[in-house]
Image (cartoon, rainbow, N blue to C red; front, side, top):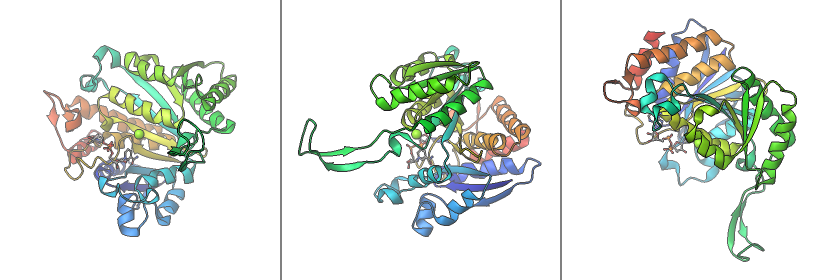
Length: 355
Ligand code: NAI
Ligand code: MG
């Protein structure tokens, strides 16, 4: 089991160290190899995704990723910005299926901004398509308009684009996942306005014929954004495109109490995956030893489940996380009165001890 460990920048370094501690505490033999990525790689090699890092990622069964980015790189040309490293890894490895489970642990019901009865017992799965849509569609750029409301004015444009096979494969991932859960898929689109998403809706409806045991509903994205905070437990599996999924999954993270609790998995068609917390490098708290490592530790559990065929070990980690929460240990982002405030390393140590 070969794991590429890519901590990246900011809190990425601190939280990945805790996840590695937890992996080492399991009685499994991993081969773990680290490499620089993001701003750290730019500083050392002049590129956020050096060939050596990409090759290590390609040669591994799974990638454990922290986060990349820092405000100090905002002025760099776009191809050299740290965030290009994660986009490059998704593209080069074909990581088209992004799983973002939003689970509200009972111990954290009070940490959410929503009423306890709305989120108690919440367990939904957002599946975001990750390599298509307006984030990758060509052409894109800036030019002088020759038509439209202001001919002759400077304008910018991107292209929203999905092919039938791209939609079919992510729809299958969603129906398969729903089969193992509560057998309901909500496909989120904007078919009333966008041709790309009328096509999305048509293709998902076609694929659904292969899964008569799973219920399918279609929902416009604006309504889905509303329903997520109105009645989040009405969802089971949500499947959507790259941009809508980006926005809705961040919205869903707040249902769980903190973005520091939200793991993710990004998979390709051969089961290889990249595992990372849903948050970024949090430059505002980097180096202070207070970041919540649980999203990364839970991402490592997803790695064991999806890419390394170690379901039992995944469940052990998830149970250990619940145990430390039950003990009342909290990093500052989830701290409330009556609980014990701990730092990043203490939280990691507590998970190891609970294992
Ligand atoms: P962010 O997710 O890094 O931080 C947002 C807020 O959440 C901050 O207040 C931060 O302190 C807090 N936060 C995040 N993770 C936390 C944790 N584990 N424990 C406690 N608090 C936590 O998003 P932001 O500030 O918009 O972006 C910072 C940098 O990260 C930017 O350069 C951005 O491009 C990059 N980024 C990278 C991602 C990746 O590597 N996949 C994803 C999102 C952003
Ligand atoms: Mg995002």
